[in-house]
Amino acid sequence: MLNWLLKFFYIAGASVCHQLPERSFFAGILKNPLCARCEGIYLGFFLSAIILFSMFRKKESDIAPLYVLLILTGFILSTVADGVLSYFAVITTNNVSRFVTGFLAGSAAVTIVYPVFNYNYYAVAQPGKIFSKPWHFAVFLAAILLLILAGLSGFKVFSYFYFSISALSEIFTFYFINLILVLLIPFFMKKADRLFSRFLAVPSVIALFLSGVELFISYRLHLLALNFAGRI
Image 1 (spheres, rainbow, N blue to C red):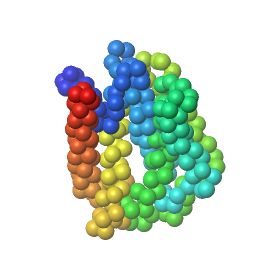
Image 2: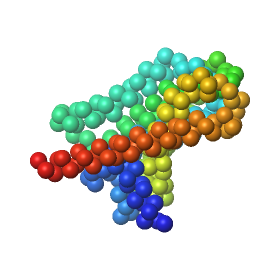
Image 3: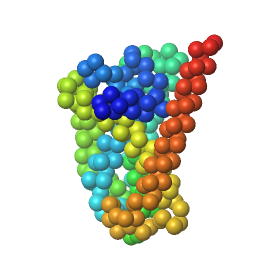
Image 4: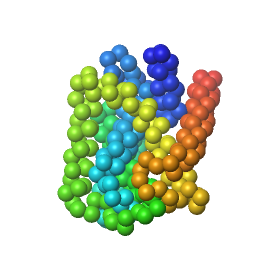
């Protein structure tokens, strides 16, 4: 069972990531299914989604204030800059910077799309902005910082925990984005009165199916690219 689960983790990771050992964190002797940057992105998306759903239970459906959006844009640009500048050897990066900037980018991405989910999913979505109060955003940033520090702490409990949820975080990211797209279909829009309702079932099945197809195609393309590179 454990071997099957580990194989699933690594196949899921291979769908989106190069999985180079020197660019990945380890949990003991186990290499994480995702490289440091990808792990940060998907963990940031997943864990920040949990925070957002916990903080905003009034179904706020308006995007965050401008200053928050500017900070979130900076988070996304940080991982882009980290990747591009290191690729062209302008700067030297390491797994810490890759993980941190990736986590910030993932957190920013889910924060941007979260109100869209609320607007499309709930029958009566509230018009209020998320992070309308600055202290809400401060708490969110503090929580993100603690999660990042936990991942970098070196404590085995956090290393194994992040290892165990990294592939799940990747799948959740694909699922949540596909779910938002499915909820754009008028038949599924604006029907729920609470988060876990029967109106989530069918859109979730469709979103999970789409995610599986996308990850499978990506995995096969990854294998083809590796085979092609090996023949050069």
